[in-house]
Image (cartoon, rainbow over all chains, first blue to last red; front, side):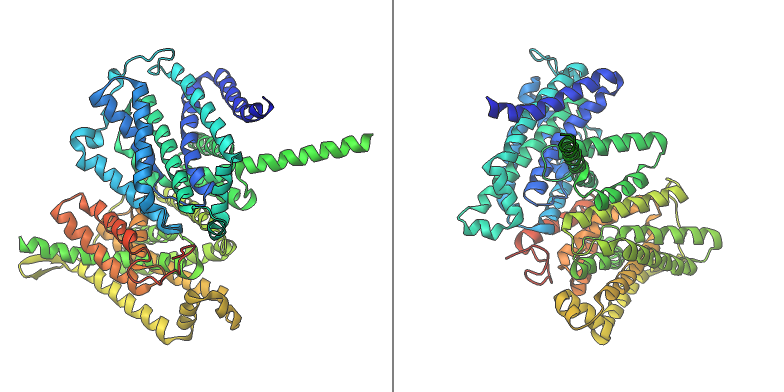
Length: 324
Length: 292
């Protein structure tokens, strides 16, 4: 029971904070849903980069896999939203299993760039080749085709918010578990020294493949949530140019930590939102801030919070000791 | 039909010239400094915008070309000495995010000074050459010839001068070069300034062909990366060959089926990386973290 509460405490606090924020700032609800969805997307990238040390320039492709799997199902085949989400997860799994063996034997920048190439080809696929199914740049619209789901009606934004909270809660518990499990440790070991892992008798290929497939599934889940939340999908979701914001958000939050992705997303989207209300050109401000974060706060937002917390705690202890 | 393809080939050659000029900086950054310099495209944008400003102010394209190149070189000097020095030796992702931030800042500055709207730049001359019945703008041919001249010039510099030899040695083995008492830091700076000047030069040459927008660097960035990867990291010859191939893929491929102009280079890169990850002229196992 004690062990269970250790996994539940962090994610529960996070979700409760978001719910409180939703009632304090009712007009920011869409923003909170966006943060939730985006942070699942960033968690996917964090497994790849923060844990396994593999950089990818093509993350929008995996988002697009999930988004289009849900969208095509809802627009052409069925009406059940939950089936659409399940289908997106399945497509993510298939993509990971098929593309994995070809991609993960590449290292460093080659892995990054083959993902960029995949992303560009994915865009091409949905824009031109699958035009009869995806309707190209016009996008797919299917809000009216979605049927109500039991318990929570996912067509309504305020109920979708609760659904997003549940998904975030589950994903965060799983992610906390991953961080502390043997699997998370082997991901980290691959980043540090893969040869030594091989020497110890681990099949690093399988470990990489597992991590890559998990990334695909999570990114597809995020994509499917985007698709259902907005009620339409167009090819801009898989644009290669958007790959950079994923990397910036991951680094901003602090790579390879449990809460890093969430805080990175919060900082990135929040800054973009905030800056674009004051000045119309967010590039300049985000660029300068990212450089400051990179050089001064190398642990990202979450790393800085942690070190500050540790400092306060040690100071508190010191003062308590001096008082006695 | 033949005329169409002849002019497509010549257009491709023009694109190759631009791709080559723009990619040298990224190739050298990969090979020599072991960083991913995404901010090369800032110099490309700066070069193009300065050309636009000077052409619309004075009407002289040559002046714009010279000032664009100079401004890009100066920007490269400032970025290298103030920022990138602190980045050398850090991990790949870090260099990528830092240089990408520089790229964003550059775009922000350009937007601040020139605004968001796309602007046309006047062609310096409109001469048309007739070749086997096809009408070809002389300017495109000139861009290609300039690209080739730059290649010859760089090759001479790398092979005949002491500084060039030091650069080549630095690509092979930086520690050994330092051990010989050569100031590698200064060589980095000089190389970087030349590379960014060339990127600015490429931007200046490209500005009459595509017009200038603040986001012109984004479009070029991916193509420049493909050129470098296809050719092999740190190989100037490889960069030239892949620029020639990609120019044809973009232009002739685009003539056959229009979407190929965008997606064709990615397909080529996809196939090459899967079967020969070091690129056409890459040295086996040289690039970061890549172990065979």
